[in-house]
Each structure stands twice: as C-alpha cells, then as structure tokens.
Length: 408
Image: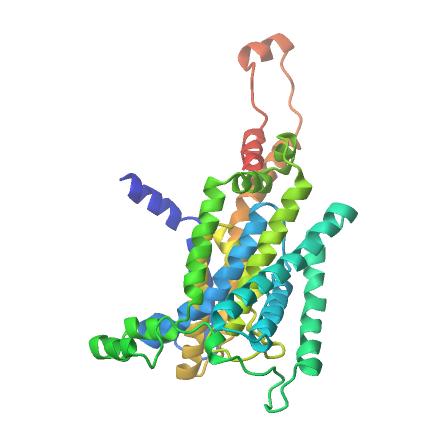
C-alpha cells in the first residue's frame, strides 16, 4: 500500500506531469503541421525502441548525453553552476583526438593516453573558472559560459588551418587507425557476431545492441556507479551536497569553499573531457571534424537532462535515455511522416520550461498569500494580556512554509 501511494505521489509530481504536458503540446504542433499525433508518437516509439537498430542508436546517442550530464550534475549538486561543458568536452575531444590520430604506438597505450590527456584538458579548462572565482571573484556561471567560445573557435582554427587533411572534402584531420578506435561491444565481422545473428536473428535487439554500441557505454556505467558511490559514501560527496543546499552552513562547519569549488570544477571538467574524446575515437567515428561536437548539441541537451533529473546520477541516466529516445524517434518520425525532426528540440525545451513552472508555482502562491496576509487591513489588537492568554505562540502566516522551503 505504501509503495502504491508513493508511486501515485510521484506520478502526480512535477516531472511526470511536465513530460505529459510537453507531449500534449507537441501533439498540438503535430496537428498544426497536419500530422496525426498518435501516428507520430507511434513512429517515434517504434524508431527509438521498437527495432534492434533503433534501440542501438538510442543507447549510442544517450552515452555522451548522460556522460556530460553527469559532469554537469557533479557541479550543480555542489552549487557550482558549470555551463562550460561544451568547451571542456570540445577541448578534451580535440587534444585526446590529436593523441589518438598522430601519436604512434600500440593501441593498448595510445587509448589510455588519449583518455588521460582529454581528462586533463577538460579539468584544466574547468580550473580556469575556479581560479577566476577564487582569486578575482568572477562568477563561475559567467566565466564557464564565456569560455565556451575560445574553446570552440580555437578548435575550429586548429583543425581547419593546421590539421586539415587535403585528401578529403571534409574540414577534418587524418583518419584514426582502426586499432585505436573504441570498437563495438562485439565486432560485426567476428565469429561471435555470426553466432548472435544465427541464434537471435540479424535484426534482433540483442544482436543490434551488441554489434551496434561501442565500449563507451561500459565506461558510462562505471562513471555512473562511481558518481553514486562518491555522493553517498565519501566526504567530498557529503560536503558538496550540503554546499549545494546551504553554502553558509558548510562554511560555518569548517569546509573552505575555495578548495571545494576547485575540486568540483576539476572533476566536472575532467568528466566532460572524457566523454568528449569518446565521441571522437568511438566507432563509427574516424576523424576530428571541424564543428562536429558543437553541431551535436550534446552539451545543451545534457544540461536539460541534468535539470530534469535534479542532479541525481541514476535520474540523469533515465532522463538522458528519454531525451535520446526523443531525438532518435523524431528522426524516424521525420523519415516516415515527413515531419521536421526539430519537434524533438521543442519537446525537450517544453519539458524543462513546464518543470520549472510546476516547481516555482507553489512558491509564488505561498509568497503571494503571505504578502496578502501581511498587507491586509489592520485589525484592532486585543489587550496584551488577553492576546497572550488566547494565543501565546501564534505563528505568522506563511512563516512556517517559507522556513521549510529555505531548509530544502
């Protein structure tokens, strides 16, 4: 009974209601475009989860979204508003990709080296914002957002004018060596893949996922497990969680905010760099292409995922999978029904807008009622002794509610 009651409360909460309302508004856009909403959403669901290839595409698309979302969640949970994961991941992809393309050596050494360089680059780019805040008082929200632009344009300049491969029509570097790539979980031309195809069928979800998703999904699972462990079992996770809820309380408890911000930005930037480079060296990618990471829009989508999940690692994974399904499904809907795939961006934005509205509306109502009560017509006060006897501890209207909200 308690489980059913909790499930009912959750279903009536802000997140499910916001998702349902966003889908309903998306249906209105489909009607305006002349498409049956039921057919549209059936095509979207079929394209993202209904086939083996659709499921594999959804999982592969979800990996960078969830990974960068975890990087953002690490910072937001500590009250550090890191909006620079686009630059951190982009530079991590650039430097790690350069190592993978140009550094000679066996793959067993080059791949870990590319990971280390990408993590270090993302962490270093994040530390710039931490130092600007700690030394000069520049808000991290502002510096991380602005540092995306030099990272973006430096990467474009370097690939276009210094690393461009003249043998291709793309503005891109040389190709990766096949042995340096993160291959699929099961190589498509292996005997095990043939066994899967003969046992489950060539289009079954098992065969499609194992032969169509690369090893970055294993790295993602390890990162999610590590984030859960850090949040629940380590001092850093405890301090960062409290800092995100009440920074003054943590400061009075003896935690220095400067080092905490530094560690948080290094960890957040390093994770962003890690998942940035896996976009470059993970099959089927073969080279660094100018503007590729920016065009994917993964960083902005990951921000929406983090906000929807309220900075929780497991919630980020679920929300990232949901957003990836919308993106893959909208592509399938566009192919089948001729509807623009931009409907996915509309639904994603609507989910966040409606979630923010649903969360903020009760607070505005409580504040309005409190202000109305405080500014109401004056009433005659009883004599002091009668008031004290009648209600010695009468609460101020709205005070208890406001205190609970601030404690959260």
